[in-house]
Image 1 (cartoon, protein in one colour):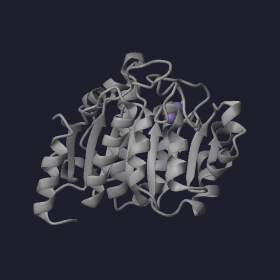
Image 2 (cartoon, rainbow, N blue to C red; image 1 turned 45 degrees about the vertical axis):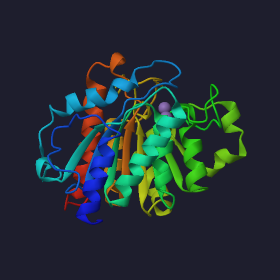
Image 3 (cartoon, protein in one colour; image 1 turned 90 degrees about the horizontal axis):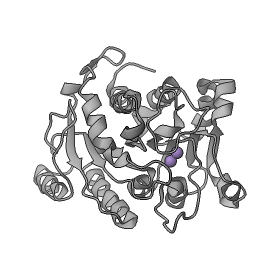
Length: 301
Ligand code: MN
Ligand code: MN
């Protein structure tokens, strides 16, 4: 960690980007924390059903209903140094918003802390990932998100994986749950530089087998990005662009548990409250707890 004086300055600098709202269990000051939670209420480029900008507030509300103790991890989350710095101020410019995300994550990373970002739409991952250049990446997503640009924006949510590839390079990104891609994306030679693990293959062989097949290649430190639409709409109906035949909630939990110890950045995006029955926000909140629990626990998963 950097010196405490520096970190106090950073806490003040971060507060100029953010409003104040806290998730339950976030009881520590910025300086003393290891996990820094923040929201990005941005959905300007969402193509089908908008409203993920209200995601961060709703995930915090659902999180209030979770027990602070989790028996699976034997962790009391109120004792884990977690700080919630609130929501980043956003406008309707995707490039500026993604730059702000990049700035915020850069400050958090300089202090050797772990950013936990709540979206908002998937384009924001493109800002966060700029601070993880030597990393591998796991993405959960129904969509390949591999367009070079979409509706006039390079920082569109349909381009999240493409932007990540530009930062990390070939063979570093593993996207689980793919079941929707355009012909244009599929026929792009760059497409083979990302390993898209199709939802159908995971259903056929089981998540354990699919993960073990790729894990040797992703066993360096990683960034973990969850687009909630990667999960089947029966578990997670509240998303902007739902897609049938998806992953189960426990498929995703399995991947989190297996990789949490080597994960230094995490996000949950695309949750859209207007279309939810309450399940998606609870699951998003629980996935955040699962990440922190699996990273902190002494138990082996
Ligand atoms: Mn996505
Ligand atoms: Mn998606």
